[in-house]
Length: 122
Image: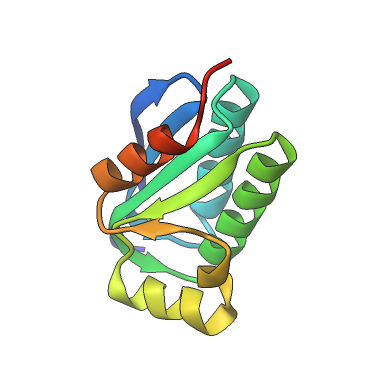
């Protein structure tokens, strides 16, 4: 592994949170990403935006982590939205069919704006 994965949370507000990843999203780093995302869900942010702009590599473990995060968000009446998907990961999502149930946007700002527009406060 040459690119250490960094996990940042640049935005939390209401039910929404952005989790920004940079580096390699693989078998060694996927558990940390999943744990951080599940922590956000457990702390009242079930609507997640995964900013993948900085991901330099993603293997099947990273893909599996995204599926697990999506399921946990869904179980908490939330969503997982992807942003700034790198080309190779986009092809992987397309081949596996995940692109049909995970909404994607060109940037985290666009995804955040779309998610904020879809949630109403009661």
